[in-house]
Image 1 (cartoon, rainbow, N blue to C red):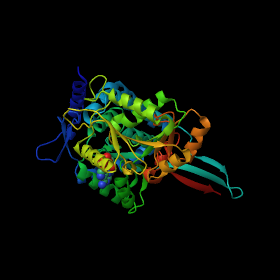
Image 2: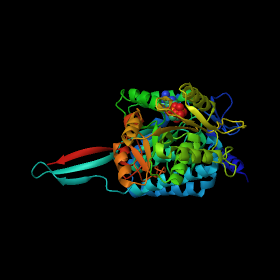
Image 3: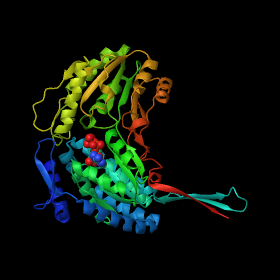
Image 4: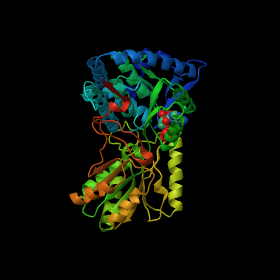
Length: 484
Ligand code: ADP
C-alpha cells in the first residue's frame, strides 16, 4: 500500500469513529488539502463558538477531577496514550506527510519525537511536587506546593503538527491540567488522530477537547479563551505577530502565557570548522521541512578563509537534492504548506534581489502543488532582507572575517531563538556561544529539539520554555503555605 493510501485508510477509520468531525450539509466546513498535489484530503465541520464555550465548561469540570487523581494513575493513562500512538506510528507519520507535505523520513522523526514527548511527560508525573522546610518563623513550617494551573488553551502551528501538540498537551495533562486544543487550520488531521488515540487510552473527552477552525475562527477562539476567567493559561507556538496580539489579549484576565515565537537563527561557520559537517549541518538546518522551522538557519555567516570552498560544496549539496512529493523515496525537500506561504517567500526573494543579493544557485522545478525551488544567495554586508524570518528554502550567505563583528551582526535582530556555530576550537565556540543572545545554541550540531531539553527563546522569540526537567512546572503555579 502506498504511503498516501495508508494515510487515507487510517483517516477513514478515525473519521468513521469520530463522525462528529465529518463535514455536514449546511454546516461551516474546513477543507484540508495535500500541499504536494492540491488534492482535497478531508472536509471537516468547524467548531462553533457555542461549542467552544461548552467544551471549556467540560474541560473545567473534568480538570478538577483529573487533578485529584494520583500522579501514578495519570502516568498510566499517559503511557497508554504513548503505547497506542506507537502502535500507529507508521500511520501517524503517513497522515502527517499527507496533510503537511514534509518528506516521510522527517514525518517519522517527528512522530518518534512526539512519542518521546508523551513518555517524558508521563515519566515526570511522579517527580516530587513541592517541598517543606523549617520556617523563617520560629516553630512554624513552610510548605511550597506546585499545583496545576487549571484549564489550558493550546494553539499549535502547521510546521510540526504532531510534535507541537504532544509537547504541550502531554506535560499539561501530566501536571493535572485540562486542555482545549486548537490546531492550525492547515493541519487538523494529526490533531484529530492524536485526540482519538488519547480517548482510546482513557483520557476523558471532556478533559482534552479539540476545536477545529479556519483562519477567522482562530481569532474567535482566542477571543473566547482570553475572555473566559476559567482558562488560566494559553500556550502558543506560532509567529511573533500573532504572539503579540495574544500578549495584548492576555491583559483582560491576566492569563498566564507560554509563547514559542519566530526565530532568525545565525549559522556561523568558523575558519577551522570541519567542512563536511558544516556543509551537512547548514543543509539540514536550512532545508529541513522546506525551510519552514523556527530554528532554521536564516543567516549563514562563513569565514572569509573558507568561503569559496564552502560555497562550492554547499551548492553541490543543494544541487544533488531531490525535491518532490514527500511520499517518494529519497525526497529531501517537499512543498511549502500553502500558496500564502509560497507568496510570502516570493515577496522575500524580491526584497533580497532589490538589495542586490547575488543568486548563486536555483533549482529547476516543474511541479504542481505549492513547491518552491531551493535557492542560494550571496548577501553583501548591508543586505538587510534576511533580518526577517524567511520560512522557505532560500539560503542567505554572508562572508565575515572578524569573530567580534559576526557576533555583533548575529545579535542584531529582534529574535533570539536558536543559533549555530561550527568550529573545531572549543574555546572559540564556547566564547561565541556565550556572547550570542539566543535561547539555544548548537555547536557542531543542528538537532537541538528534544523532549529532554528546555526549548525556547529570548527577546521577541517568546516567553517560557517547553520540554526539559521543568516541562510540567510550565503548567503549574506555586503555592506557599506557612503553618505556625
Ligand atoms: P503562520 O502565519 O505561519 O500560519 P501563525 O502564527 O499565523 O503562523 O499561526 C500559528 C497558529 O496560530 C495557528 O494555529 C493559527 O490558526 C493560529 N492563529 C492565527 N491567528 C490567530 C489569532 N488571531 N488568535 C489566535 N490564534 C491564531
